[in-house]
Amino acid sequence: MADVDPAAPPVGASTAAAGVSPSSLSEAARENESGPRVEAVYPNPVADGDAGEYVLLSFPDRTAVGNWTLSDGETTVSLPNRTVSGVVVVAANVSAARRLRANASAPTHARANGSHGNDGSSTRIPGVTAAGLALSNGGERLVLARPNGTTADAVAYEDAPEGERYVDGAFRPLGATAHAPATTASVDARAFVTPDVAVPLAPIRNASTRISLAGYTFASERVADALERAADRGVDVRVLVDDAPVGGVTPRQVRVLEDLSDSGIAVRALGGRRARYDYHHAKYLVADDVAVVLTENWKPSGTGGHANRGWGVVLRDEATASALRDVFDSDWTGPDARPWTSVTTEAAAQSTRAANATYPTRIRSRNVTAERATVLVAPDNAERALTARLRNATDRVQVLQMTAARDGVLVRETVAAARRGVDVRILLSSAWYAREENQAVVDALTTIAERESLPLDARLVDPDGRFRKVHAKGIVVDDTVVLGSINWNDHSLRENREVAVVLHGDAVADYYADALARDWQGGTKTPIPTWLAVATAVAVLVVLAALARRIHFEN
Image (cartoon, rainbow, N blue to C red):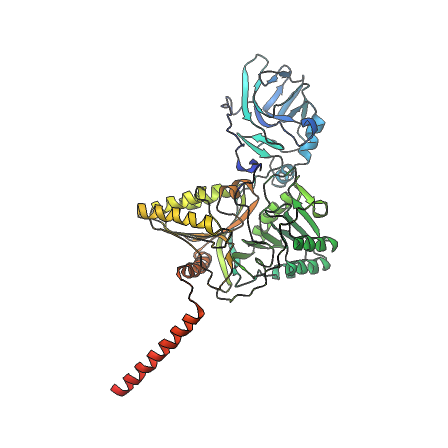
């Protein structure tokens, strides 16, 4: 089965994580940012009859809310005669609303970070029963009014997706996280590329306390064996995957994950009716105080070094490991996380043999020190961070990707960098399932570069026997490198759970830039048939022999 990553939203997919609703939103202007306001609206719960729908209101000062009203233009409900302060949940059925909020992961994450978040995430906030409150799934304008009838705040929304909450002008899934970029200075790293180097198992083998592995798919017996041995040593091992990857779950993955579960390892899958993201597409590992961040899936073609050109890094740093573990924990406890044994899997269209090819080690791993390492998470913070990185590029932007969307924000920012005079190279996969789409991107970029005389070059890679296909998601910008699970399309940035790491410093950036340069040169070559190569070599030897005889006689 091909490594086909989710590159475009499937029909009917939620746009929750994108930060926008499926249709245009018409949020009313906030009339008093510092006064009482509507913090969030949850009109379409995943529950029969929308039981538990609620509105979060914020009162900065102690306020007697008796005779305050909440209206949608058709129905007006009065708040009870109570004095409240801070954030309160208003619902016709407060108990049901509390149950829904308790199932969300955001409160757990917020408390762990010493914050209540921007929507009053704590489940212990006061509840106010407003009999008759009914929120429209199709959209409406809510007005919070004072006893004298003046408007304190107004919020408008349209077309509420199921299981999503309207906050700050956008629908977001209940339980969606809000991780900030986490940066650590001076991080020891081991940089490597596959298939030249199989993903190192030393972090798993050396773990003594806990291992958290996050993946899109997991079908590597090599890694599974190492995890089982770690569990046998008493290490707490957890594995988190997507419940419905593109193309279905292969019989091999089912078998490997069932074997892990049978051995006592906790395995969960993200997705289902409560899904916060379209896909759990992240690929990383945290073992005690060591982290591994990858562009590759946990399968022989990727982490086994048997097919894919990918990028990876081992980060020996407690703070970086802790930041990634926070991401893992918030997903592990999310409302959409279920035990693997309870997931009904959709079988893959076909079962294929695991990749088992071997390739030469031409690019060896290297121990380097990153001046800084920053953990990025999508949809929480990655788009803003990556666009800022590209906008600040001054020297080089070098991209190695499986695919790229011509109209995506990252491609647009890359072209903008070329227009500023930054040297840009984009190298895309030539695999059969991506060739036509990628060639169209290359042609479009080439046309722009030629028309505007830009320092921009794009091409498809020629593996030339060094690997089977490109699956990497990497970029070098000046003296930084970004690698992880983020594909170069807006869907990846806005709809999926993705994880990447930004490594700062010439030493680490140059390692991946040199690796990309080798693949770039391979892309310029036209494969030569073996018989022609042999014939050419023989002809050269004959010429050299004749020349040697001539030189000898003339001397």
